[in-house]
Each structure stands twice: as C-alpha cells, then as structure tokens.
Length: 326
Ligand code: A3P
Image (tube, rainbow, N blue to C red):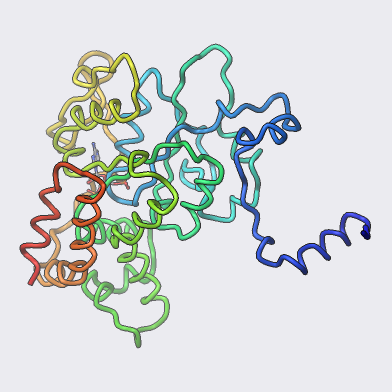
C-alpha cells in the first residue's frame, strides 16, 4: 500500500479513474456517515422538495409566480446571474458545489412545513440534469409544463429575437426552423436550440430513467392559461399540501393582459411583465405544417409515454398536432 501528498494522490487516482473527474453531488442525508461530517448549519430540510423543470416558454414564470403566492411554498432566492433562475444542474454552476446551491435556500427557523422549490426552465432538456438532480434530490418531485412544441418553438424564437439575438433578427422563423445542415453554424445552432426542447418524449424518457412516474407531474400549459385555479388545485394534490390554498380568491383574468393575474390590494391585478404574453403576428401556416410534420414521431411517442405512465387526459393540443399533421 502506497500513499502520497493529497495533490499527487488525486492525480494518481484520476489517472486510474478518469470517468470520475466530473463530480456528482450526492445527498448527504442518504448516508449517515456523510451526514455526521456535514456542517451543523446544514440540513436536508433546506433542499428543494420539488423542481419546476421547464421547458422554456411554456408558462414557467406564471407557474412560479402562482406557486410563490402560496403561504406554505417558498422558492429559492433569486440569482443575479441567470434571470432569477439558479440553473444549477445544467450549467457550469454545478461545479460551484453544494454550498453554493444551498445558499439559495436559507433556513428560516420561524417557518415550519415550507415546501421549498426552484424553477429553472432549462433543466428539462439538459442531458446531465436528470442524473445530477437524482443524485442530490432522489425523492424530489418534478413538475413540467407542456404546450404544442410548434407553438413553443415560435414563442422561443420571438423571445430570442426580442432579446436582440443577431441571428434571430436576421432570419425569419421559417428560415430558422427549415435551416438544413449546410446552413451557417450560428443558424444551425439557433435552429437546434429552438427545436430540440420540443422533442418532449426524448427528454421525459431521460427523466424517467432516474425518477419514478409518480414523482412527475405534467401540466397542460393551455390549462395553465385558461384555468390556472384548477391547475394549482391539482398541483397541490400532487404535492400533498394541506390545507389546500384557494386560488380562486387570488387569481383573476385580466382582459387587458389577456391572461390570469394575481389579485392585489383587493381590487387590482398584478400581471407578469411585458415579456410574458408577448404580442407578435401569428405563425405562418407553412411553418406550422412544417413543425407538425417535424414533431410527428416525437408527438406520437409522447402519447405512448403519457398512456404508459397513466395520464388520464391526453392534451387537446397534442391530439390536434397529430391529426392536423400533413
Ligand atoms: P408568450 O410570451 O409567447 O405568449 P415562460 O415563462 O416559460 O418563458 O413562458 C412564457 C409564456 O407563458 C408566454 O408566452 C405566455 O403565453 C405563457 N403564459 C401562461 N400563463 C401566463 C400568464 N398568466 N401571464 C403571462 N403569460 C402566461
């Protein structure tokens, strides 16, 4: 048996086990030995109990806002870097470590029974996210929102354009989605970022290879728009939160905004900002047809997946996308 100073020892170790150079943060409370050597200030109660995983542009901010109204639910502190989202499991933030992540969830000794959660919409399609999330939060519940992937792609394009992306401003939506593999790389990259998250079944299968179907709650994004009170009721049932918070007295449809907003000061409504529920021209018919064809196999696989995990109602947009597909 040989030993060496820590640095040398680490170098030798990783020469033998190169696949272990990428860290995976496990849950310290899963092993009594780890828990014993953990800081006294840390507790697994201050890790999130559920994650809203996205994908982007499906109504994740509305859901986040509605959840934050709930007296028993608390979100992370906002991150100044990433538009409030922590984006821990998918990006380089993961290498900042567990303490960095946990600092977003300060323990509040005065409040009991808080359901901590975080929402990072890019988790949904991140390759490594399910594995990493499961290693740290094996018992966490997952919430995803799905809308028509064609509609999602269009909303994402509009969002990216509004943020001043040069490629999105130089190419029409139709040019982006139909760009072929001989197109300039920045255009292909934009196309992939626009279209890939909408391959819902692929991403959900990856999540389901780590988490049980019972841990996953799928929200129909169209219902979130038309009847958020019912969506929030279902959500509370899924999270087993009692007593149930009555959202009918906290949300109201705002005709000016065209969406449900939070009721504040008795008679006023507080809606999401202008970047949520944007005004843009309807999608061209040829783009819609192209995307319905593009997503056909993915949508067919999604129906199978939903049936397999016991989803009672197949969303209407999914039926429409499949029947309207040319
Ligand atoms: P559009 O701006 O394209 O209409 P996300 O928060 O995930 O980025 O999603 C943004 C989308 O949320 C908006 O897309 C909008 O359609 C949808 N949405 C759902 N409920 C909403 C609400 N109550 N207020 C504003 N937008 C809402």
